[in-house]
Amino acid sequence: MSKSTKFIFVTGGVTSSLGKGIISASLAKLLQARGYSVTIQKLDPYINIDPGTLNPYEHGECYVTDDGAETDLDLGHYERFLNVPTSQANNITTGRIYKNVIEKERRGDYLGKTVQVIPHITNEIKERIQELSEQHPYDIVITEIGGTVGDIESLPYIEAVRQMMWELEDDCLVIHLTLIPFLAAAGELKTKPTQHSVKALLELGVQPDILCCRTEHPLDLELRKKIARFTNVSVNAVIEAKDASTIYEVPLFMQAEELDSVVLDKLGLSKRNTPNLDQWKEFLDKLKNPKFEINIALVGKYVELKDSYKSISEAIIHAGVANNVKVKVHWIQSENVNAKNVQELLHSMQGILVAPGFGSRGIAGKIEAIRYARESGIPFLGICLGMQCAVIEFARNVLGYGDAHTTEIDPDSKHPVISMMEEQKKQSNFGGTMRLGAYDCQLKPGSNIYQAYQSDQIKERHRHRYEFNNEYLEHFQKAGMIGAGKNTESGLIEAVEIPEHPWFVGVQYHPEYKSTVLNPHPLFVAFIEAALKQKSSHG
Ligand code: GLN
Image 1 (spheres, rainbow, N blue to C red):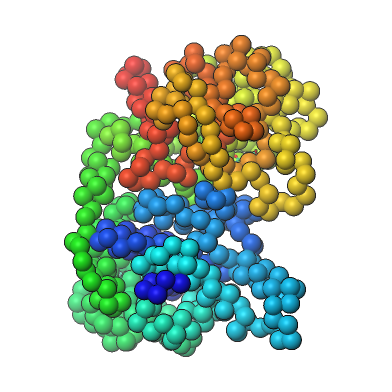
Image 2: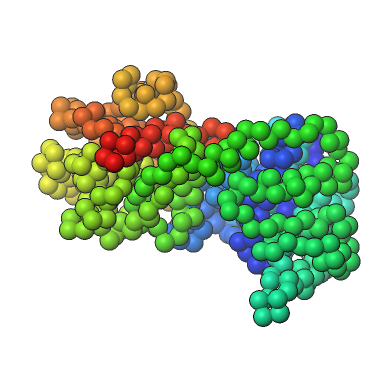
């Protein structure tokens, strides 16, 4: 641990979904804008080793880092706000903590001792928190504790926080995010749930330093004083966190509430620079004042839970801003798309994006949507399974292989145009065994994708088991679908394209993970630009 690193813990009270991730990312942004190096970590109290095996309906998208960690979607917010990559160390679950401790026990590291929650589990948690500042000399590490105070499963985390506050004294600080509900019948904001939730923290030996209060209405001074009085928190540390029209507004709300100043005062850090948020404000200004509007269909099977495609929808927002356009996303359940209704569903779209995924549900609809995009000249972006479906569609409808498929769904297909990667055949476990993380890709000069990146060498993140079957490459290229991106080491095709089409790109990797506010992803920017052109040429 770097000696001067400060630790900020963010806990949540009253209910889940208050937005701890966004508050953490917003505070980090403000501290970064003052010149501090900051990272954010998420501790998840569930027993899965990572969210890689979770259905997106359970927990939203699985976010993948450069080093190939399958992580909580909050890490996506951290990267999008801070513009700094995260890693496996930024997301730890109870499963991982226990796995490490049990492996140490088997190795004999605790020989002779009874292994217990305190101190062994709590020590492991503390080590994982401090590990980040050992890897890199951060000024500040913000650790977001998943779940809600009072949950049985988060107890060891709160205990670890209590111990660190005792051991590191002034180098630690706790922010508690809570809810101040508005009771319409009484016409009043109510502080009682917050009082109870702080009491629950106090019972565990943790006094919060700052309260961030989610509210739909402004908190007046009297109410702030009341909250302060009941919770031993200074009035200026009772922060109003009102609902925002976009998550990207939250850093500015927090700045107006002086959250960063209060944090720096309490940690004894200087307020050295006035934060420079000019680029951020410019982004927000463009976001709120678009010049054009376009319609994009997002075709996927988890559309009922929008968090399943979090990074994609945020990347679309970033790319919209880069093009001065408001992108209206139409969420289309792929299971509902068929040859009869595809025209009606998609004819008014200026772009069609087919999402990543696993398994057979909704595949037929994805293929139908792609056929429509290909035949009608609507700009198309296929991501991972979306790209694989584009290859299947082309094989079936252009090459005439009616039964072409991916071996993921039809292992006996006579035309397995997408097949399992060789190295994957050796895997017997499910968790953490896909081709994960960042790999190099060489792009074909002159292609649309090359045009987008303005480079022939890129590095993008992956999460898949199946891949374009190179035995068919020549046949595809002759018929008009080219391999536009390739990993030269393995020979894997990472991108396909139809040069005859206005803009038809499929990528095996996930560009969405790398799009940030300050660095909108070039492929999304190019896709939206192509969609905008489509609009002007078709009225
Ligand atoms: N199921 C496909 C594979 O494993 C695609 C994965 C994805 O879309 N992330 O290759």
